[in-house]
Image 1 (spheres, one colour):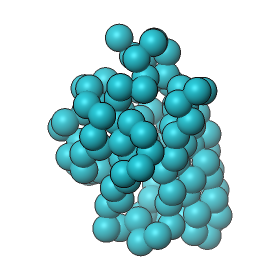
Image 2 (tube, one colour):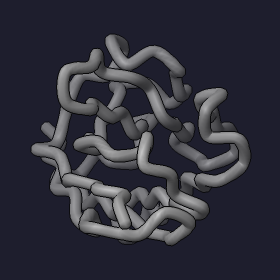
Image 3 (cartoon, rainbow, N blue to C red):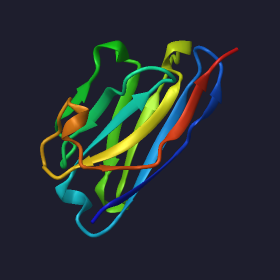
Image 4 (cartoon, rainbow, N blue to C red):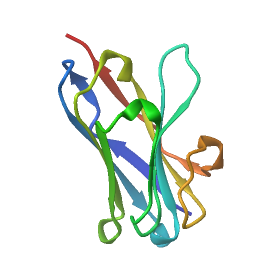
Length: 124
């Protein structure tokens, strides 16, 4: 069983950057596709980005518009989300999630294991 711990959230000004990290425990990290999903106060959960087990395939939500980059280092059991040109509307709790499949998915309901989340606040 994989367990996930996110870090890297915080307060940043509009236009700034943050890098989120998600470290997995367990032996089978390489067999999992990974994703980032966020939830803003009073809003539904929404998919942000995902990456296949090999890192060769990635998905991004339309609102990302080239500002975010997902990556993974399987040897470190870590997945990253580099977020640039942040906007106030990016404010949310960001969750790392694992899917028991080597292929990534843009659907948050297809992820089986979730971290506790990390808060990202974009404000001046």
